[in-house]
Amino acid sequence: MDLSLSTRTVGDRTVVDVGGEIDVYTAPKLREQLVELVNDGSYHLVVDMERVDFLDSTGLGVLVGGLKRVRAHEGSLRLVCNQERILKIFRITGLTKVFPIHTSVDEAVSATD
Amino acid sequence: MATVELRFSALPEHVRTARLVAAAVARRAGVDEAVLDEVRLAVGEACSRAVGLHRNNDLAAPITVMLIEDEKKFSIEVGDEVPGSAAGSVPGVRAADGEPDGVESVAGDEIEDEMGLAVISGLVDDVEVSSSETGGVIRMSWPTVPDPVLP
Image 1 (spheres, chains in turn yellow, brown):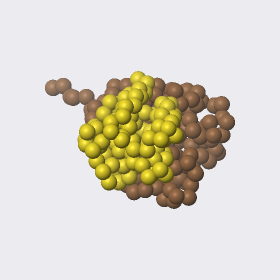
Image 2 (cartoon, chains in turn blue, purple; image 1 turned 90 degrees about the horizontal axis):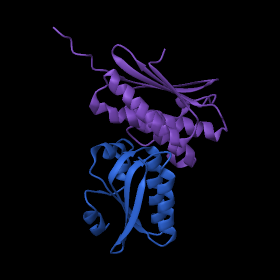
Image 3 (cartoon, one colour; image 1 turned 180 degrees about the vertical axis):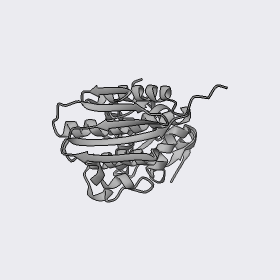
Image 4 (cartoon, one colour; image 1 turned 90 degrees about the vertical axis):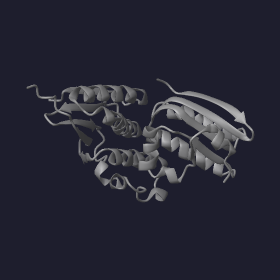
């Protein structure tokens, strides 16, 4: 399965819906999407990963890169994920301490630091 | 001899094929269903790393994946042909439960490399990384559930 990407605006947040597999082949597409959003002035991003079937360290690297970009503009990058097999990858790499991870898009969109 | 041996050009698009084949052979070998996700992720990480090493070193040689079914375990060996690629000398490999050493001081590629190895060592209990003049190998194994003994 390939990667699917779509974006929508909710209030002052931009929600990126990601589906499919994020790996060494598809991660560059996600990177391009995040870079484009930041270049266009969207600095508060919510990445919805509920339809992601597979995530590897390349995907983690892209998310960390996205976080660095939005933080350069005092923005935020929040994740939405309830899938245990995806959450496990964030835990074993210690990235649960780096990303705010929410259980729903509504929760992520209304969250403030 | 390996139960199944897979060789593929060092291109990112083939890593998914390696994941699918490895998971299929692992399932057949009797690896627990609950662990197949880990097998898929670990072999993907090892293959992504090997692809990156070959591409960074302009190597045209393929990546080799050996899937080996033994009596009580299922093993995967992912081999690259980059001399001294070293997996053994990469500091992140033993730091799975914390941040890899020296993250701040290394280049982006190395961080991804370390993160891949950190994921592997966090997922797989039995993992061994070695390198020689002919290239590096990541060996991982999982226990298999024996077939039920019929009365």
